[in-house]
Length: 314
Image (cartoon, rainbow, N blue to C red; front, side):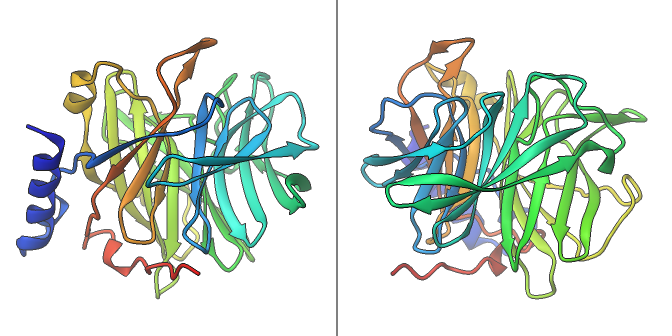
């Protein structure tokens, strides 16, 4: 089925039917955008208050603005970052300020860095270094597996997901942490596949204070887009695991592609569409150009996706 037919079918099912199950119908990408940049290995994705899309690569020290319609980019150097970390996730905080989640090779580390970047002329500089302790989840990190997902839901609150997976009684969980004025609160997100791991987050704040999130769950042969709600309360790990809803099961679609994409970052666009960036750099080899895939707007009553506000562009 052609991508335009798939998108049309997804929209028809998402908006034309009343049941909760049908409103979470299968989604497929409706657009593919080639990113006009020589930078490879894009990993984090976010949208600022003006509706501008931004991306960050794992190794190059640059922040890139991306035109989702044309793929045109502008690159801004980042200065002051620790050479030992890779950049894995990205969240917009406020005008001229972003938060980057990182990972490192040291398998004995107890924390991963959360770095706040501030615009300074035509560059970004490190404003603050903070950490996310793995003790929140009683797990240990692995070499080159770190803060793969990070998002800012508003009012200084962030949601963090790691690539580490915890297995309990045959169930697989992605550790989540929510940091707000009260400190850190730990949760567990039940994964939907036998090998998938979280590789990207995008979120906003619901009217009752819950966090509404969409995420990528992926590994070799597994690619899904998830949606879920994080309650506005502290919860012990595994006491009440969060059950996500699968917005898009793309296992078969990925296998059909000439170059199976490795989805690494996700962001909800101002018009409700979902943008996903592909990491095209693996084991020091480039696989095709840097690309974005764009999914049509998805309404998910179970996770409250219809509560997501539309960003007013200026």
